[in-house]
Amino acid sequence: MHNNVLILDFGSQYTQLIARRVRELNIYSEIKPYNKLPEDLSEYKAVILSGSPSSVRGENAPHPDLSEIKGKKPLLGICYGAQYLSHFNGGNVAPSATREYGRANLSFVKEGEAFLEGLGEGSQVWMSHSDTIKELPDGAVRLASTHDVENAAYKIEGENTYGIQFHPEVYHTTDGSKLLENFLVNIAGLKQDWTPDAFVETTVEELKKEIGDEKVILGLSGGVDSSVAAMLLHKAIGSHLHCIFVNNGLLRKNEFESVLDQYEHMGLNVKGVDASARFLEALKGESDPEKKRKIIGRVFIEVFDDESHKVENAKWLAQGTIYPDRIESVSASGGPSAVIKSHHNVGGLPDYMKLKIVEPLKMLFKDEVRRVGASMGMEDFILGRHPFPGPGLGIRILGDITAEKVAILQEVDAIFIDGLKKWGLYDKVWQAGAMLLPVNSVGVMGDERTYEKCVALRAVESTDGMTADWVNLPYEFLQKTSNDIINKVKGVNRVVYDISSKPPATIEWE
Image (tube, rainbow, N blue to C red; front, side):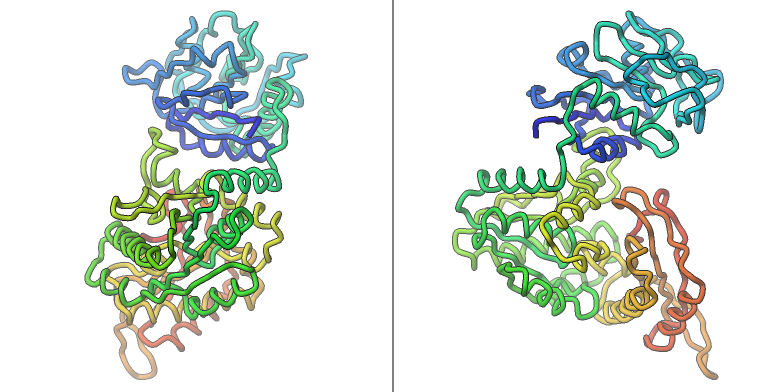
C-alpha cells in the first residue's frame, strides 16, 4: 500500500464511516486507537482525527502525542479532532450555549480554498457536539461558518493542517465525500489506486511471501467471506490450501450437501466433516447467548485441531474474518469504543493448537469483499448469498438448543428464504433469517387448542452490517409465508416480523 491514510480513533460512533468514505475514494485507510500510534508512521501519507464522546476540557480527555504528525503530514481533525487541535495549540474550546446536533448549512465559505472546492454557501453539513471552538488555534484562519457555529472549518497557515466541527463522513453532509477528496487528493496528493484488482494483486503477493510452501487449512462455510478468502489463498498457494467444511449441526436445511456441491467446480481442495453430534452435545442445556458462541467457537477449533493432524505439516489456519467482525469484537483494533459481541473466528487460538492464523480479508468491509470476489471472476450466486452467522442457527434459537428445535427452525428458514427467491425479493434484501423464540403461545388449529412455538422473521437492508434497516416486505408475501410456515412446520403456530433497526437492535437476536 503506497497511499495509506491513518485514522486515529477517539471513540466516535462514526469512526468506521470515515474509513469507508476514504475507501470509496479508492484510497486505503486504517483505523488505529489514539493511544496506540504505529511506531512507523512513514507508510501513512495523511492522518485523520476522529470525533469522540469525550470533551477536550475533561480530565481524562484522549491526548495523543502528535509531534511526529502535526506540521509534518497532512492532518484533518473532525469534530473532537478539530477541537483537540485548537485546545492544545493556543485556541479556546468552551461549552456551546445549546447542543449543536443535526443538520446545518454553511453560511460563509472562504473563497479560493482548495479544501472547500465544490462547497458553497448553503451546503448542508451534520453537526454532533456539545463543545464549540470559540477561538482558533495559533496561526489558524477561519474557512467556513454556519449560522450557529462561527468556526465550522479552519486551517493552520504554513501547515497542511485542517479542522472541521461537522462530520463529512455521514450522508447528511451532502458534500462530505467531495471535502474528503479535496483533502486527500488535492492537498495530500494521494493517488486513488486502491481498487479490488489492486487488492487482489497485493494480497496474493503478500500471502506468497508470508506462507511460502507451507500448508494452510481453511474453514469454508459457503458464505461470501470464506469463499473469497479461499480464492485469494488458492491464487497464492494453490494445492497447499486444504479447505474443510464443518457441519456443526446448526446449518440451514440441506446446506452441508449443497455447499460441498457448489465448490466442486471451483478447483478448491475441499473436505466435508460432519461434526453435528459433537456440537449439539457440547451445547446441551446451555441458554446464555455469549456462552453458546464460545462453545461453538471452542468446538469449531477442536474439530480443526483434529483435522489439522490429518494434513501433514499444516502450519496455518485461514479465516474469513472481515473488518466489522474485528471492530465489534475488539473495539476498533483495541480502541476506546465498546465491545458489542464476540465472534467465534476472532481472538486467536489456544496454546495447544500449533497453527498460525492468516486472515486475508481482515481489513475489508462486506461490500468490499464482494467487489474483490467479482474481480476474481467468482459466480454471482456465491457473492450474492446473504451473510450467515458463524454460529449458525445456534444464535437464532433463543434459549437452549436441541436437535428438535434445529429441525423446526431449518424448515421455517427454508420456507422464508425460498419464498424470498420465488417472489424476486432475495437480492433486494441484505440478510434474512428466522428466529425460534423461547415462548409458546396459544393457538387454534381446526377444533383443537394448541400451545406451540413462535418464530420471528427478520429481513434487513445494509451495506456492511455496521448499520441496518428492516425491509418493508409486501404484506401479501408475509401473509403467504406465515400461512406456509404454520401449515407445514409442526410445532409452530405463530409468526411475527421484526421491524427493529440496527442500532439499537443488532441484526441477530443473540
